[in-house]
Image (cartoon, rainbow, N blue to C red; front, top):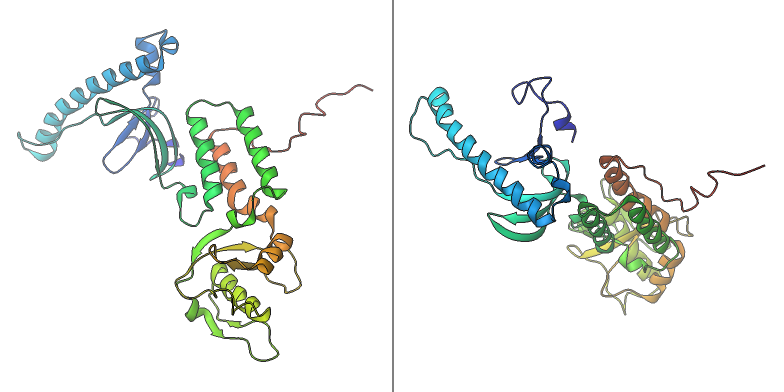
Length: 311
């Protein structure tokens, strides 16, 4: 995290090592590995549960030291002798990923002295409601594996295979649509198409989801499917897909999960831009993740095939 790369003087002196990994509103996260390796030179050979126990012992010891220091803080800073300040060990984290303030994932193995197995995730983009579920599940799985020690080559291979499934059509488009709610559909619809017009007029400021929903309604009316299939109305939860060049020059098209006309499905199969789905929704998230891990990102399966050759 950039916020922790430059340590303020009041945290520690310039030449000192800062072991604070992350700070939240009322929590401090410290990297205890250097201290544990100092106390136990063969620490890396310990079973995972033993590592957790040693870490918790160190944390409990330091919580008492800090709580005792609060007596001095209360006297010198607030001129009081009685207070309720105390430090408590909240949990033991075997590994964690801190992307930015309030955006992190942590693998918790002990919480308040009780053994746990929790992947606690806060604020990461793949958890948002507008992230396609199948892509979010994939990112969650990759994140979990990394936190539990999976190697980069294996992660690379999984990403390469998943990308192939998106691009070659193995994964149905209905699973790749971006979820959204069209709460201002009536606001952005300037007027419906008149006789001789195919598409309605859209007011300025409409986002991609609302434009795609209006285009869907226009198409099913034009194709005379509106008597058999539902139109999208204000407040509906939809999915939408960006399109390649198509006869109607549409940038995106929405659909309803529960009522997808076959003609719309065929149109999406032909013109949905799977490459853009990969690049704009998932690839940039993976690139940022790799960068944070100081890994090189490349999903080209042939990258190492021409490392050497003889003439």
